[in-house]
Image (tube, rainbow, N blue to C red; front, top):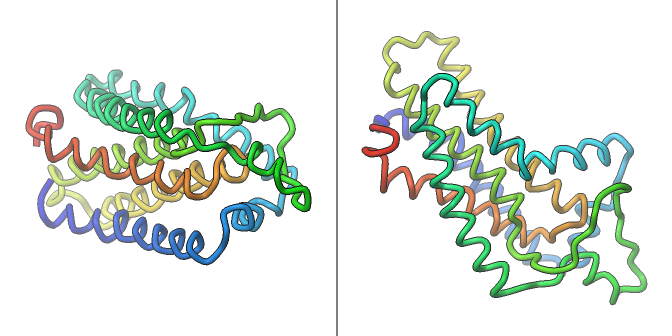
Length: 223
């Protein structure tokens, strides 16, 4: 990945993510956890319930299937890159989950009689191992891997790309960040996690691909 392409990726994907983190940290500092959770998911509609219910499931297996698609074009290295990131990030996440073992919202809110937790029909609720969110980590892991792969591919053909292709590349980075953020928020909307859980999960999913890229770029991505 050339320095110029890296800077474009940094400005369009990395900086907006850190701006989002700043907003999240500010909210977590300003409001107690239960009150913040109610603020973020108290406005439910049937359309949103259906969307987030099924969109959240993407992190359970569909994203892993999508990670296999490069094999159809003999891009084995791309799938290996995702697998390496997911295994590394997943190991870190599981260690934290079972070491810290915080209660999930549905358990915490049993102690708050004045607050009714909004739930979505048909969603199986979990009670333990809330921190950090594995779904949020997987969403950000997949999208960040895609960003790095797109940036490497774009870097190889930067000089031959026209304005339309460049705009498509920039738009792809923005879309991937939005898709990852929506996936993370779905866990709060469904009351499966608190904001702090998805925040740390997203950080793991965001940092791991960049770390794996710098450690193994010459072996996996051939950069």
